[in-house]
Length: 215
Ligand SMILES: [Zn+2]
Ligand SMILES: [Zn+2]
Image (cartoon, rainbow, N blue to C red; front, side, top):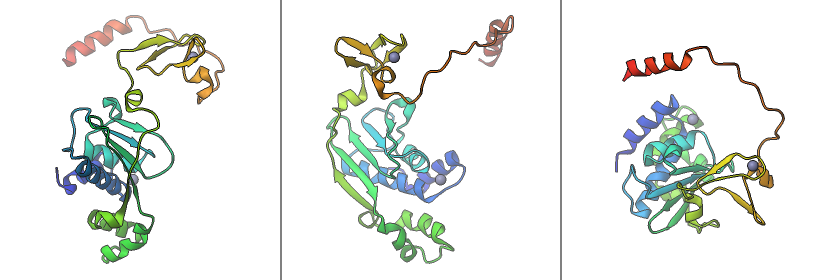
């Protein structure tokens, strides 16, 4: 495992500064890896993280675990909680970690030099023993892991909007194949299709020549 200090440096570089929730994200990742007996950071798909908020915490998790959205090893389910679930995808052992609410009040004891509550949390969360900082639960996933991971080779088309659906994310409504949006789980209302401006003449060839020059 890399030392916490190094992980936090990397997280802070991504986040532009270091803040207490990045420390929580990094420390919960290190604790989960120890409990799941996984080395960090991961370059493979042995660890799947489901973070229950976006923002600062996730940057700490990414720096510690190497898991990321583009690698399909990090999912955000935005419950607005500084909590995350860590899944060993081979054994399917699943651990959910959430910071103790009391940890904030205790931070002054671990960081007497902190000039304010924020700074006390920033320092204390790096040194506070894990049992005082976190609640750890063994949980089981409601959706099977294989379904969460999806099937990358799958590709189909929604019968209503005609848009392509990848990774096996279609929803069956009787015999109909629907996307999540058309099945009533959308996050937008469709209004009107927009007309895009015409491409500048020769824009493709000039882009190609730029790409060629940069290779
Ligand atoms: Zn932050
Ligand atoms: Zn659709």
